[in-house]
Length: 413
Image (cartoon, rainbow, N blue to C red; front, side, top):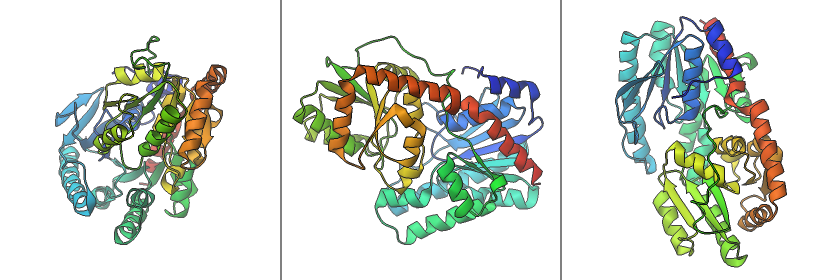
């Protein structure tokens, strides 16, 4: 692992404002260090002098039940396969909570911790925090990654009993939290309005990329499959990511408009097999490359050599308020972007992106075509995006706010 060598990280190493603090972070949906946001947080806290332990699931390439990496103690536990339906989620969440509680007790005895940071989804980690708050006076920080009522509605296209449970769990999670870390201003408003938090207890820490880690690769056409252009996508292959809309846009671009373009989709997830089948049914099997979950070497190579990148997230209440990490990674690699018009996507990318009408695959295809035919505009958009990441949105710009959130939590003892 490379060491952050950036101004604010170096200042934190010198000042060590969290010296003596002991932190436990619980994240349920991804292993560390694969979860980049949480890994950035861990390394920032250790640079600032805290001792950090993490509880997370195992995953491909991250099977060890314990590792120490860069001074961070990582405890991993198994989970059932990807949940499907209400019973599947009940099994997954129950198993996760059991493992999280037993490991939290183990870490409390072995390392100790004065602050517990819970990273959703789901909004259930407050259940692990409760006994430690009550009997050990541990502070609880809620790191708000997803808005789960909206996520449930986006996945299942309905409300009902389980949606009301999501609303209840979110409310209890906010109520338990001493401090909330929001990923953007939209999430901050939710913490203030739905969560009832005080303004001084909510901090916006964006999921900015670590520019010291991203490596630009030499120019290459290895991903083009012999075609003139290549369009890249990076992210989870899930049902709510809008990749079906991207494939429909690709069909219009390739079969109707006759553009010579290859789509390269980097990432794994529960919808991957279904998307491969859909691409074949649309006659796009030779025009779409699915890499599956890939190492950074592949990710960086695709992003370095794409003509442009896409974010097909559907316009819905969940995606409108959420910041997608892929957008900032595209910008870091100086790539122009095409996405549907959502509030936080527009805030992040601004002039680095074109914005298609909501869920309109024809408009998305047309905007991709416009950029493929205009390399000068592409270059200007890419330059704007890179500059915005460097000057405002990279992880180094989040360091002071994260430390301030932990300082505030300590004041609430």
